[in-house]
Amino acid sequence: MTLDITDLKVTIGGKEILRGVDLSLQEGRVHGLAGESGSGKTMTGLAVLGLLPHGSRTTGSIALGERELLTLPPKELNRVRGGEVAMVFQDPATSLHPMLTIGKQLTEHMRHHLGLDKREARRRAVELLGKVRIPGAEEAYGRFPHQFSGGMRQRIAIAIALACSPKVLIADEPTTALDVTVQAGVLRLLRGLCDELGLAVLLVTHDLGVMSAVADEVSVMKDGLVVETGPRGQVLREPAHPYTRSLLDSLPDAEPSPEPAPGPRSEDS
Amino acid sequence: MPATDDTPRAPRRRGAHPLARFLIRRILLALLLAWGITLVTFVLTNLVPGDPVAANLGQRALGDPAIVAQWRSQHGLDKPLWEQYLLHLQGVVHGDLGTSQQSHRPVSQDLAEFVPATLELAGAAILVSLVLGVAFGVIAALRRDRLADHALRVLSLIGISVPTFWLALVAFYVFFYRLQITPGSGRVDAALGSAPAVTGLQTVDALLAGRGDIFGSAVGHLITPALVLALYTIGLLTRFTRSAVLEVLGQDYVRAARAKGLPGRTILFRYVLRSALVPIITVAGLAFGSLLSGTVLVEAIFAWPGVGQYAYKSATTLDLPAVMGVGLVVGVVYLVINLIVDVLYGVIDPRVRLQ
Image 1 (cartoon, rainbow over the protein chains, first blue to last red):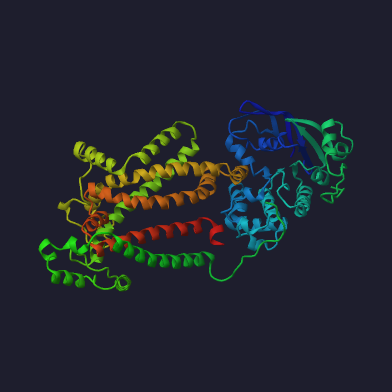
Image 2 (image 1 turned 180 degrees about the vertical axis):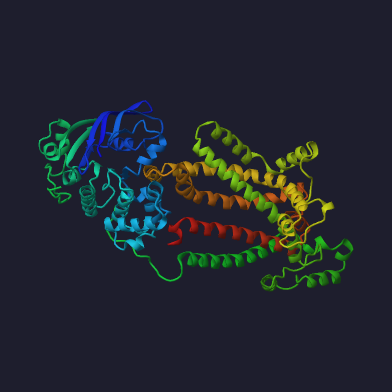
């Protein structure tokens, strides 16, 4: 299923945050969304799920297949959330509830959206934990978030996002809060799941290294507008917009090489 | 927080269930504190200026050294202080708190009569303030800056700032004397007799005996003093619950729960209230301590035969065994409240019990 964002405008308290964003996600493709902080990347992701802060106004269109998400009644929007469009947040230390077991957080929305019974939900949860490569999935099911390292927590957050087999995954800076050594593992996992499950992924990041490692398409945002969009190779090697060029020039090695995060991307996918 | 490794952390120790270990540790600590309470009540009671002999014997008897000496030795006051304390401690361990110099009955027997009345009053007030305080706080937070929030803010401010004794007098005057919708003083209508004492709590005993009429009368008598006593805690809990819930509502994991498409009710009860309960419980534990001291005034105005009145009478007559007995009971009640608070932390938050 595709997700098409057209002319998305968001104002919060009279301030224009997004000024007409156009983006298109295809299944099985990772769409990278880059830009400096405050450029509106995260807001774009939140707008898709209707999670913008109170008092924000949204116009334009966010179409999931044939359905328009912006005008969906709350009840149906709640079915889309977690069920068809899922989200992974920036910091797994704060995005998991510290007082609920991993198992509870993995199964509650499965049971709600898919109507599974306890046993079936548990079986699926353990399977998911294995899929995101959590060692000892059976034992991990009954543990609490603080008993896992940051990288593990983000894998668990990804498992939670994937629990109801969504079609679209929005990953908001999923590696920013992680140590460099575990970033690559999480990115590789995201890429692999995208290929395997045919997910449409929106990867929000300010890290062009991350971008060059896994994204198929790249969009660059500045001041609430998408200033450039296109295939990864084209945008990162021959940037058309001066802002993209300055972003690339600001990298330490001044070269958009995939060095910082080695993500072996299979070319046949 | 950056992660440094990608392996799960193993639990530090194996063996007993973590919650059980947590409980045992807390109870041992509570016992140690209970011993401390006996020491402190004893020392404080003996430090108080004032001569119990002068307070208890008449003018003529005071003039006779033989009578004074006999009275002192009868109450063990002629022994060195440390020996008095050891005897007192020995008695406490065996449930013997000495004999009241005023009622000439064992202090433990006096307390057994008065403590349940206070527990019933304070317990009802605690129950009411927890239910109403938390409910009001949640409503205020969810309706932030709307009419309900402003109204509850004014209400809680009134609850916090109005002195208990004034409120008790006004409530007594308005509801009993003017409107005559509540019964007057005491715990139950004397005409109804009383249910056989099992727990000492009139309401519970009446239910156990199947006496609906006594139960109704007991609840009627309980409701005004309990509400008066609870008003301060209701106000306090409303304010703390409001800010605790607002803080949790802004947490990442609440947004994450919304992103999962969970129903609003699930998010409120499972995600928001669970976290908000930690600061709420802390404040509630402290507030209930001050609620106990409020019982002295409320009991006096509603003629509630509780430990507050007993404490007042004992203190003014320098009835040392009775004062120590009351001190011990109040100390132990504080201890139990704190123990409950500690255990609740452990039950609610796995990070506390798995430490």
